[in-house]
Amino acid sequence: MADLVAAVDVGTSSARAGILDRAGRLLGRAEQPIEINRPQADHAEHDSEQIWDAVCAALRGAVKQSGAAAADIAGISYDATCSLVVRAKDGAPLSVSTSGEKRWDTIVWLDHRAIAEAQECTATGHRVLDYVGGIMSPEMETPKLMWLNRHLPERWSEAGYFFDLADYLTWKSAGTLDRSQCTLTCKWTYLAHESVGWQSDFFRSVGIPDMVERGNLPASASPIAKDIGPLQPAAAAALGLDPSCRVGVGLIDAHAGALGVLGAAAQNPDTIDHHLGLIAGTSSCMMALSPKARPTPGVWGPYYGVVLPDYWMNEGGQSATGALLDHIISWHGAAGEPDGATHRAITERIMQLREAEGLDLAGRLHVLPDFHGNRSPLADPNAVGVVSGLTLDASFDSLCRLYWRTAVAIALGVRHILDALSDSGYSIDTLHVTGGHTKNPILMELYADATGCTVVEPAAEDAVLLGTGMVAAATAGFYPDLAAAGHGMYQGGRERAANADAMRRFERDYHAFLAMHEQRRALDALMQ
Image (tube, rainbow, N blue to C red; front, side, top):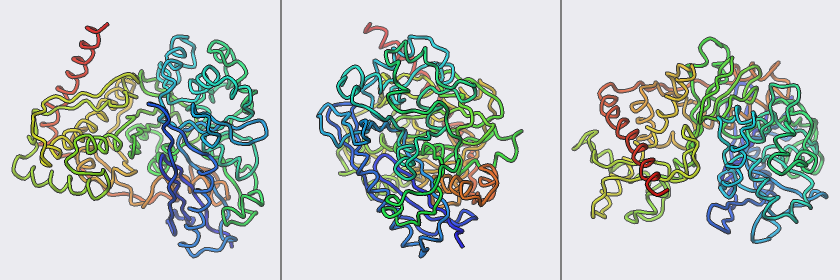
């Protein structure tokens, strides 16, 4: 009997796959790396064929580890970063790279080449901006497509397909051109709550009137977990699955994480706006759900039906968090490569230093963590990082102090976003954290103490794969709908309450954090 599902999660640097049972238990997991090409500053590119190969290898590995047979797996779904895949009219890869190399056909989500185009979108004042927090981000697909049209016009003229990465993977799997309501609504300015989702006058105003037709985009989006058919034979063979396996419409990776940690909370619509999913790795995404639309300046959304049917979502974010801690290690130079062992060594030393100095450790050292812009709540991709309080000390301990205070700044950035959501009517008191940051005890402690929230660490080994597994289970018919799958497969979690004494210390830090924002703004004004 086919009673298992496959879930695939494509992140910034790897593809991960898992095999799950009906209860959400992860039976097998495997991972494969993927490359990033950086031909210029702020440019980042993937090879979509390499991603597909990595997906297939990871899934075959997960199936092997689980001990399942191909016929045991009834459904599959995908989540992925919101990267833009461009294909030629014949479906072949089409370069988006200034290098011209054909294999680089995907603009990575974190690519900031389209800052000027994003600003042009914002300048239109079009009402689609009411559903992206009022300001267009260069991480969304519309400005990236504007850049492609403007800077590589010959590629634009050759283009025949535009995909968000998760939709590309369902296309490779089932051969259909369905696009997810999650991807189109969150990254393409599609208005899922309206009868006509695409706003053609907006695309005309920004110089890409033919975007929908050129990219073979459908007139309407498909809801998450919609069954779009069985695997194509070639895809089934590559993935190591049976061709009868059903393919479900997927979603963006952070949204899969939100489903994995918040799916059960949807059973209580009156209290769901007290919960926030914090999906934290290279960057951090903060997902808040509500039965009604809550526009929040500088926070993406409100988006309709992009995690669960009938719920609106607001998405805050920090463009560099795990990546920022890596950068601090590389930048300082006292510890070598920013690998797992280095992070652990720094964390252990911070704990030792805190035994002697307490929370006042490096108390005069302050950081603004906007080294890759500020996604929320300032929505300023041109924002820069700031470090105040440096000395000539270049020892390993000085790195540990800087790392500690950068971690504090990352947690204060979460509070900054929570304050913006609170101003829009949310009452968030519980953070459900998943992703790589759960392996960092300092960050997990700070997320509670710097925000005053209860922090829940999911019991699920991989909450992002769990969320995508929920989608696959609904697709396979294990549950009547996605909400039921979210409730039935949720794994629970471990709670951590905020420390009152630490909260008082970080309250002072938060005032300094806000003051530094004002000081940066004043310095920028002097240079104009």
